[in-house]
Image 1 (cartoon, rainbow, N blue to C red):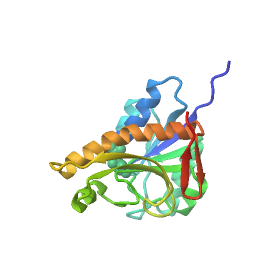
Image 2: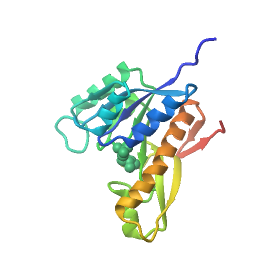
Image 3: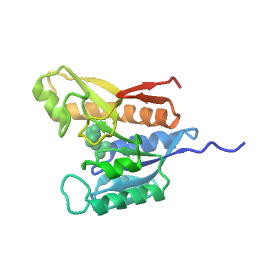
Image 4: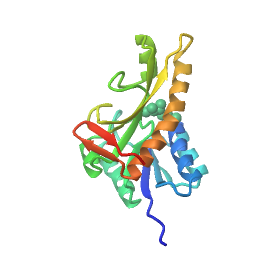
Length: 210
Ligand code: GRF
């Protein structure tokens, strides 16, 4: 019997890469996992995510973001898309990638770019969402995996996980607890996408049971 082709995932990150580690290790731990990570790209040459990928024997590459500060400039965008296409990536998973992706990138991967965000969107989009949640005084926050559209943290929501805010929380302890939830949610979502169990109609993503 021929082995089923695995869904090929490319991960983009700028930071330490704990979500990448969760995705990679969940796939590596299960020979029947429906996805594999085939490429990691970063806009930060010394990012921990690249070292984490290399230590797992995965292809990892720094690609210059170009001249802009908050997004990829057009030549950089073309270079990212070319690298992902060359690796025959089916899905692009952003994991702490600190640049906004725009039209041409998203057109190359329609409805196939996802992101993880450390709040229950649409609450607290943008930077340091855990700090925003604490300062606002909410009693529960969490994390969200969503499809990426041209806005900031605005695309259709695929999955969320709730995390309580404790009276004694600092921004650091709350972020840590949210990250534990992220590391469960992100592999579950990628697995479901790889198994074609997510349907999207308008803004609503629904799950078929696996
Ligand atoms: C995560 O908290 C994620 O929600 C946000 O950036 C952070 C990345 O962390 N988008 P890591 O590099 O995966 O540890």
